[in-house]
Image (cartoon, rainbow, N blue to C red):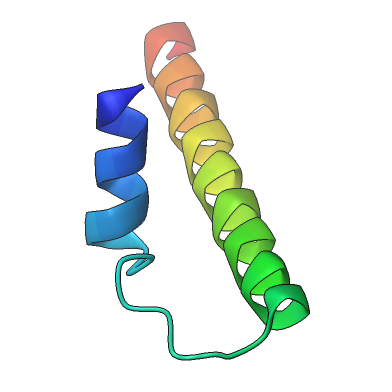
Length: 53
């Protein structure tokens, strides 16, 4: 879990959120999570292609 939170803070800049309001912060965090999951899926797909080749 600590590695996950570290990635959110360091790579997605969630330690310095510049939006105000609960709704905007929630939206910002969810978009960051979607970006993180999308990146992990892309890396997995590339790794599978390299193994198959």
